[in-house]
Length: 424
Image (spheres, rainbow, N blue to C red):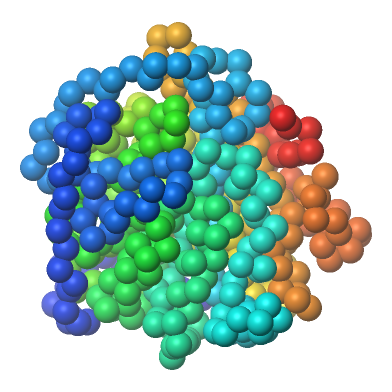
């Protein structure tokens, strides 16, 4: 929010923010061959249908992945192929004071101490449950559980937002944004620690240089899905070490994608934190980068966040690009109505008889933040929770979202609104 746009990244920083937490790399065996689970950010929980793996910087693992033994239909829509898997993605988890006040009130109403953001996010659960993998974006660093908390311009938000993301079903979060180093190295590491404690895998920012050279690969029942994320800038700030945050650079992202493929990734997602705030269309940097990623032939889908507004979906050379998901959660803005709106997108990927994976279905959900109490609320045609801000306001949000989403030909290419009441 209110960031300094399109800052040029300067040479490696000399400014110190605090001591780095020590990291480690644990080698493990899996069906992918010899791979490395991400260091201190790779604690296995055994609680989700996904596992996360990453390549150590010196890895030469190129063993051919073992074939899957049986057909797998996944949790998404009907699967006409032998194997399908679905991935749901959301926009910025952007927490301001109004939201942590609400979380405190919600915890008290439940007879619990502290803060509970789960009621704020609860409406997303119905859609998360209809996907095999759900990925959020942790926009800002987090504080300790008791604060001190701060919002814009230098965020330090309650870590309970991360626990709530896990509670509603997210299995991983991206972490590279223009606010990643608002609280320096200490804040960056504290955020990764909170993600680990919640059992959420992550990529985009790192504790160690070795971690930064790894690849996050999330395994569903049917497929191995790599996530490669980067941000356009850091609001004019500079990290303690250049490798701490992935910066938006097409060749670097393509190189990581190739490494992911060598490690057995079936599907590679490119994620861009970029764009102009409150815009209705992608800027040149977004389009150029997204097209370069697709042109490389290494990415199965590209999506983005940062603008705090919903942006169009494009089918470019047969590959989906979701330019902007708006906000996953945020406070209500009195100035920018688009700030209060967001998009969930679920892509189903199918494997053909030749073994190639591609998106066979792309569906989106329009949403809005409401207050009294603050809640994420779907305004999809079947709105499972009922009205959000009222029938007229909900219809306006849905129309505004559809108009933007389809402005680059998405509907004609097959993108659709997600109506979960019609699915198996």
